[in-house]
Image 1 (cartoon, rainbow, N blue to C red):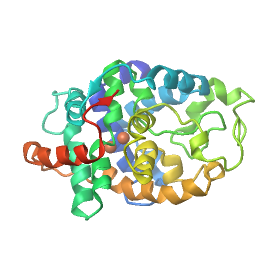
Image 2: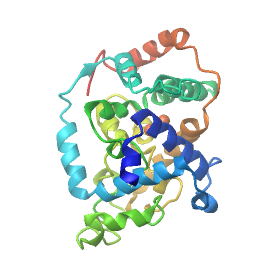
Image 3: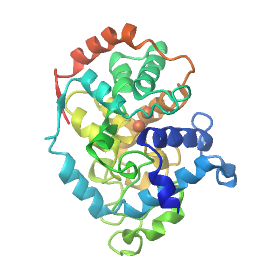
Amino acid sequence: MEDQHHHSVSPHDMEELWEQDLLQRYPTEGTKARSEYRNYDSPARDTVRAFYQQNHTHQTYDFVLQKEAEFLGFNRREMSLWDAVDYLNTLVDDSDPDIDLDQTQHLLQTAEAIRADGHPDWFILTGFLHDLGKVLCLFGEPQWAVVGDTFPVGCAYSDKIVYPEFFRANPDFSDERYNTTYGIYEPNCGLRNVHLSWGHDEYLYHIMKNYLPEPALYMIRYHSFYAQHREEAYDHLLDAHDREHFKWVRAFNPYDLYSKSPSPPDVNALRPYYEDLAAKFLPDTLRF
Ligand SMILES: [Fe+2]
Ligand SMILES: [Fe+2]
């Protein structure tokens, strides 16, 4: 029943619901999830619960390794940055055009808010491209393998992750190789040695890793890792380099989560600025 409900929601609507849900969990900057989060019911909340039931059941260590092998060869499409933005925008569900902002508008609003605060150009560009990994939806991937909070696999799932009870259905939950505090990892081994659940963050990180500075790569790779950047649930896996760079992940998060404004940005007017920015950092085409 929940499953059917989940599949009736378009990828675009699911992302909107996920973002609305994040705003209910984290209504202000820098705080932990509000404790009354789980206490109210709504159809939107049911959809998000069903989404996490799928996500937490299926994001196993083996699943993540399989997706890494499947997608990190980048043999699907070659696109310029703006081609990729246009392509991502085909996710839009036009059934609700007055409420939904399309993907381009989310990217532009995030980037323009960063720009308005006077941050460096690589930070602005990162805001503009941070969700491009969602093109995975257009390659036929299920939503639970593209969006949603991310978390380490190969070690115990933290109860600080949203809806932790759904991990009980995950085969790794009762696999003793993977269900201890450290699992297959060493204490403070550094996140570069840790596999996170598969989704748009990890995918885009690998596309961008040769082109952007390290703080930008942290923002891209860990922006959905709320269990760490808001809840500090995995301090025991971080090394000193991670701890230093998570300041940037936390600096980025408010722009992603709280930059929505009802007046959509003027895409055509802004396009030349962002094309110049892309030309400064990125090759003419990127491989997806
Ligand atoms: Fe994202
Ligand atoms: Fe985003």
